[in-house]
Length: 116
Length: 115
Image (cartoon, rainbow over all chains, first blue to last red):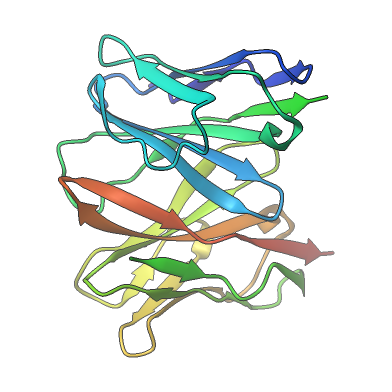
């Protein structure tokens, strides 16, 4: 079956512009996660969705970052007024959800964002 | 709070040699442990995971890991590496937090297999 997909795969933008990153999870997966992968920083948790609600937004680095999920499926991560330090690979993952322990997360290929 | 330490940022190893990638964790509660692999320009994929039971866990591509509770470690091993194993490897711990799994990843270890 289809895996997690993300678009665009690469995005180059100018400082100060807004960007939208899209994630299509695996069909039927109710849990969705966004991570940021910066050079030498590992994976940084940004936000978690269960269905359309986001019980944990603790990882969003500033109020310039927001995310939404509609129809329990597609999610969009928006970065407003981008800064050069926002340059990173943004990864989306989904899992079955339901709170079962030890669930595997399935990752998309990521969106590589470069802010000039 | 939980944390994961991957002591080696890069590990070069010759083809067909054994390799061990180290992972230590800290947590005040029981955790579940994972290793993910990221091949160049791809997303992460699960290599293996420990939930309970036997402390020796076997994963894909001939990798295995051993959970050692007393040493709070979950080191990844392979007896003979192949060129195709060149990738970045992430150790992760997860615990149940407010009804969902909060996952903490290590910073990753880049395995470079030398022909």
